[in-house]
Length: 533
Image 1 (cartoon, rainbow, N blue to C red):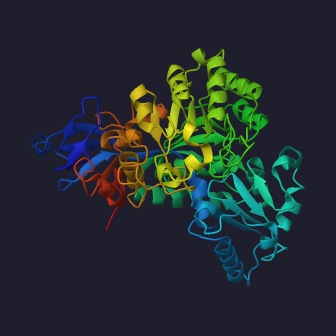
Image 2: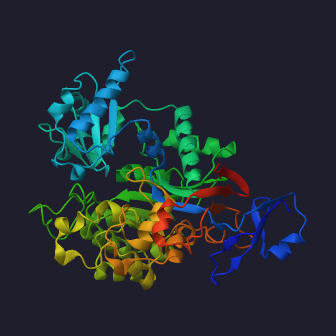
């Protein structure tokens, strides 16, 4: 045997809830699960004393933007800004830092006007005061709204798809929404394959530090230039060289039906895989965000009369897309935050005449925030996955009710109800919108409190999860979403030796301590990819 981890609290998460003391690894697979006494009798090359620490299956984030996270880390980050003036100062500082080597564009991300003393969006004229020579864009935290300067607008008007996005562009204020934000990336310099590979390895390293051995990530439209083939080639090259330190299940986003269809017609299918890189579901975006008031609602927003948000695809288009995906053995995952968006997607899935023949028909809804009892029942009846982000409890708890009204609060952010109904739910972060810190995400799911511990009883406390349920969102249940439940997600013989070791036992400590618990080790295929000093 290659290696044995012993003297631990090993939560296998198997169906029997077995807790072991030791686990053995050979050729990257689990070959033994048992007691310390049994482990002592086994000859192996290396033994690792866990020191009574908790060992779990490696964490998996089932929805984030791994490449875009790395891109944002190198851009002007606005997440902590408390005013438009602070945003402008941060952008100005970056421009001044590059005075000797002028920038060709400036990308800024992360502002949230709801955290400002004077809640407002920046204006085109304010960005013009920074520069009228280079295109500048400031994208809101949600990624669905941005503001750009005059130079950015001038260039945006020249792209071939401008007629499709013109309705989402305000030339007076510089405000752009939804697909207009996405197409703006075509104005920026396209990174080389080497740069893309550097983005990937940087993100994987940071994910390993947080205990992640797997991701289900939306990347193909994540970088300037939208060169999805180059992004695919970068992942495949790293995988072929053995340098991809996470198991990657790609959520394949294309904004237009013709592009998605072309991808499938080139022969790509859900489940095609290398060593650590696998083609996952087709990714669609059906509405916007709650913060930008572009999530698609059946009734107008309480604080934005007449506004029901944005729909991206018509019902007819969705029906055609799901029929096409089912015909071609493709899984699909659709961004939906508002109830209207979810109703439309559920209808399209239910109507597809080919789903029963699709071996990859575990379709899902990403975010699932403004649900209600009717929608949740329909998701269960149609066996639709829920890709949820417990961290949004922290982000949204003070803003939801003013946006949608008290009468629509029943059944929203309903993680516990989903699990009790038997809906297959899995956990993610949506990084870089928010942090992919697994400990924080589990804390939010268990306590329903914000990062500061408020409210004391939790927000909508009836939807609190147990520690075991919250952990399974990022392990066992995540494996189901990628068809790898026979390979990952639990600690059982024959499965991949992907583990995370924590400094404290989440099952024993005060739930408020979960958010500050440290990851001590991350093991991928039996090899340590991170160890805390």
